[in-house]
Image 1 (cartoon, rainbow, N blue to C red):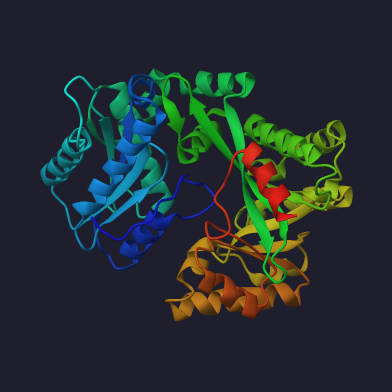
Image 2: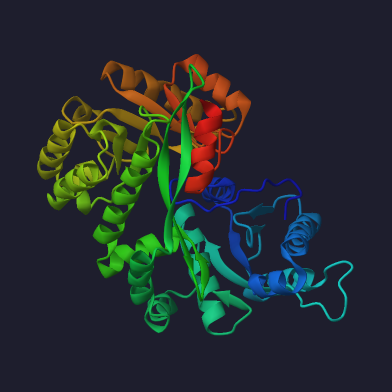
Length: 425
């Protein structure tokens, strides 16, 4: 496990985290990795017994100890206040991987200065294997998340992902029902990752990202529940929930920043369904927001599934004033020829290229050429995954319009987003 690590508060669906990037590089170099999601549970009980400050110190200390036992080529990353990801290189044997997981769990219990009557920090470790179970960074992270949930359900402190148990876990936990209840009870929340004008430094808007804290289970990764919604047919309701809430936020910001734009991700299946036109029209009408302040992000590959139907729907949405952004640009297999016809306003450069642009000449060329392509088609361009001043400055030199990433701001809850906007005025 690497002693060099950064703390990222959320595992996002909108691209690769540092761990995701490391997995992608390992796949490229044909290396084997064990991906562990370490979830600290019973944190509420710790807070009730010891207080929030002491509990926070315990979690911070655990993270530091994880980094302290790190090997040179491994990685520890914090992806939540009580969740961590650990990447172990070169471990093929499940027995060795299990021993490493047990060591991590002992480390959690070894809180310095803990009194005998204080509760211990308990953890569940979910494990997925790359490339054995998947060569896709986002998917193998999701598999590890599912293994963690399954471990908690089956009272296994260490649980390996098995494909035949994933669907059973969804049934046993009643996840479809829980997700429906979450939408109805308000347990789902949008967090907002600010987007800045790279040239001027002004805040231009934000991307809306869904978060779910299930009362009995705890935080559930978007990697898990969005795929769940796809498989259970709840994705349309989930997306319309996001659009309504994004419009609500725009309404709340009226008078503070009327020019802000909020982007919502739309899955491929919905962009071919005319129902989304009515859903967007309803949301903007109910909250009285200018349609030009709402952006729908659709992936490059989604545009190619049914080009005729997609083109017609996107055209109608743009006629309403809705902005259309092509997400994950450069990761698909489509021809550039479709750009001359597709109804879109901007391209988003996939974060995997942005994060590698300072170290990889090939990634730099992709970023540079994407900006040039956007210019030639009169499209705006957004870079995601900005993690340093050096990245931001290079993108500024290349003429990129907008950017987002942890260097600018992590995804934040609505109240913090409002305060962030006020301070940025």
